[in-house]
Amino acid sequence: DTEVTQTPKHLVMGMTNKKSLKCEQHMGHRAMYWYKQKAKKPPELMFVYSYEKLSINESVPSRFSPECPNSSLLNLHLHALQPEDSALYLCASSQEPSGGTNEQFFGPGTRLTVL
Amino acid sequence: AQSVTQLGSHVSVSEGALVLLRCNYSSSVPPYLFWYVQYPNQGLQLLLKYTSAATLVKGINGFEAEFKKSETSFHLTKPSAHMSDAAEYFCAVSRGGATNKLIFGTGTLLAVQP
Image (cartoon, one colour):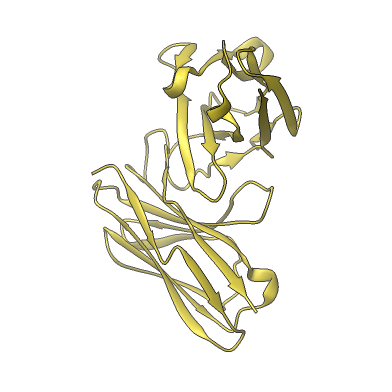
């Protein structure tokens, strides 16, 4: 299995809602990532998990809360979002956190709309 | 610090014509270099990567790229464009390891005219 899966594909939420994005990979990768991508822009790194521990937080607002329950799963919990948080949220994984090329495999993304 | 520059935010070619997408990098150490493609409303798919094994790298869908250290370039080419090649293309650089971030260029939107 060489796939990163993400659910849901689309999500519409109000500013007072709480929702979660889910990402899963079964390639045995030990690094997982969340990116945010606005239209016509490259992905922006949000978080990196290395061996299930948070290793990078790119100064992301606390209304975004990542969680890595095990080596295959990565969640992004959302609460009290703003309309400007509407974007495509991409999950990625790579094989070796401490070395290697950092070749990342991306999921299809969740298209989030905040009303 | 690493950075990536993609010259040309939009490139338009005719079907069957040569595709050339430009990427220049700056890095204080020999980098790893990648080209990713993104089709509308989809995630990123790796086209090819340079990892110092060979300077001419062949990827999927007939694409290839040549690493030129003297020019700090990693341009992407395809001899004959197909309509299905229309997409956004991102060049990226890394020094390796998850804590060495993947730095993306601003992207080039490739249009293929019939």
